Length: 336
Image (cartoon, rainbow, N blue to C red; front, side, top):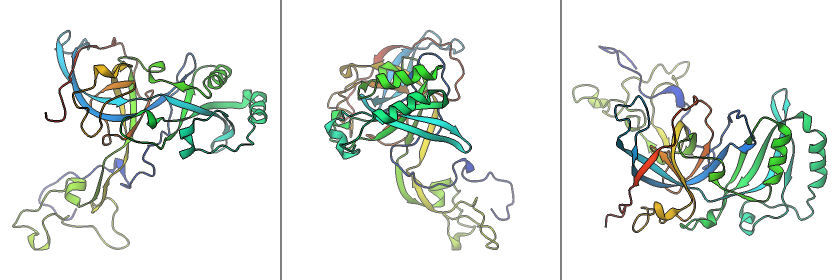
């Protein structure tokens, strides 16, 4: 950063380099946890409705407010059912995992034609027979699902395609479970419960081209220093030969980045949207018409963006009981 009269921290975290826009708006989950027990899907997806607040009984034993009513900000996530249209089997390979085969359902809903087209002559029997014969070599099974935005209230029609891992102990039980849900709808309440810890993945709000001050938090130069060369610039941009250092804050595109937030707590899973709908609907979204999740804190992305939820990959065993929600705010967000 050039010559300084005193030390200063670098501007902007290098954790998120390169700061480029996400390739897809739905977000991509690259890591899935290992979950023991009965077979179950390890992820789901919903649409961000907005934020509100609840009053709950604090259940953290070490909190000074334990047993008392506390105020919590929560994000509402509408989760219409997912439609499972296929399953995919993977085997271990020298450079990761390789697809052994996938079985698709023949009963696809009408709205899926916007995203998926299955050949009319498609016959899943040979592929399923091959998977049955090589069941001992399969290391992982994932289901292919599509969202159902036609059940939402804001006019979205094109569904998103998701690949979700099925967790469990026995690969044979996992395979039978994946076949049992093929061609069916699944709901969030089948996999998540009140008080559960989850990870959320989403694409943040795009902010366009931004300078170094907004993008990295660079300090604005005072009037007596570097003023003739600019105030909202970096004082020194490193040597130009052999090349400029990539760590120097520079202007560029800001926002629309994929981000994952770890260990978020689900405050409530519900099938009754009347408990959450505010007068006039949520701002820029409308009324919730399907199942929903209340997740503590805020989530990345703007309203109506798809948010993916998965079982946590970093969490420690939680001994907390399900939170007791006393009140959910139904105050209008329309300013009426």
